[in-house]
Image 1 (cartoon, one colour):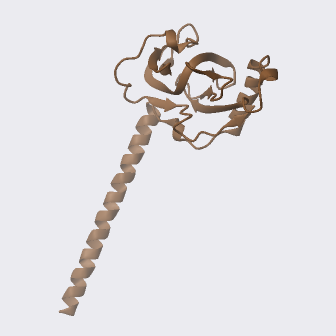
Image 2 (cartoon, rainbow, N blue to C red):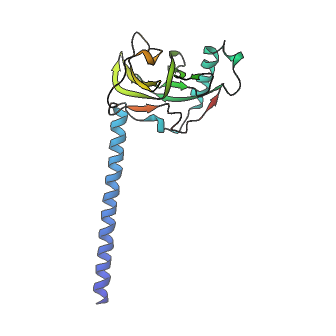
Length: 199
């Protein structure tokens, strides 16, 4: 009788281990498929990427000191901080840098100012009166994804045109309805714990 109980116990242990192994493989397979589909589709949410490339930070610092050269003497030490996130806005396999601020020098009642820099640090766009985060859609115009930006409590649909995005989102068409599926949220200064950098 003991022998039968031991054999039955052994069989049930082996059977439960096999089920857990199969279940584990299915979970891993689902994660890999999801990651691949988002990466290939250009919709992966890179805001979860914890690596902040020091080379990118130095590139942004240098560019901000050039772009804000005339403003620097009037700025306090607390004004001289930025946040950034890297995102491939034109699907060329090179990240652009979305740069934002959250202090009174750059922000007012309508929102804050910010920049979009190309992968080499060159200026693509300066924008004003914007609240963060910025939503990147999966719909391109002139090879750059459309953006949805909030300004003064309303969302606006921003299209890349003539080599840049419009600088004032508040005068662009209001976005109505749901956010497009597969889009990404970037530069979420309030919601995510983005690192703050000095310049």
